[in-house]
Image (tube, rainbow, N blue to C red; front, top):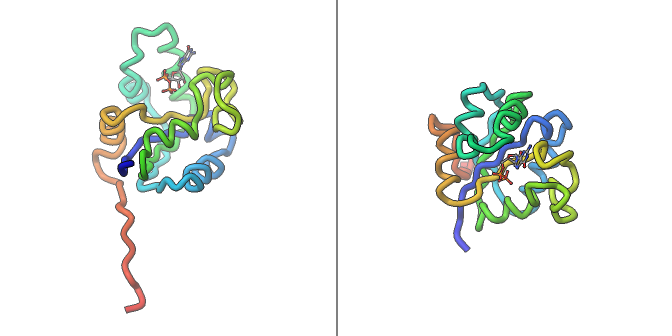
Length: 148
Ligand code: GDP
């Protein structure tokens, strides 16, 4: 196992359902550390650029509208095999196929409104983290002894 970083997004439906704490709690219980977090409301340009890989798919316009329908929470998770660990905690894209106890099985309404995004590999993780945090905001987990 190696320490990795993954981008997570709590999508507009997750934020609207007030699930930020529930979802972050699941990451932390699994041993993942939050090393960056920011709430933003994506513009159309940002949503289109983030999901550019899907631009030829029939659901692209709906996906972009959904992603800009309300604020999202973007997070960087760090930990052993963080990319796969996060994908396991999220569950399958379609909540109907997601394992019981995963975020999507527990809370998602549909294959589109599926609560969370997570990087699917090391290259996309790097790109996605740079997309949201390229200008800073990653906080390494250091803790100084403040009793001295
Ligand atoms: P993910 O990595 O599990 O999020 O899945 P994908 O990268 O394949 O898809 C990106 C996002 O597009 C998903 O999380 C859904 O929000 C949406 N999506 C994927 N497949 C479909 C689909 O068949 N129909 C619709 N409406 N949305 C979809």
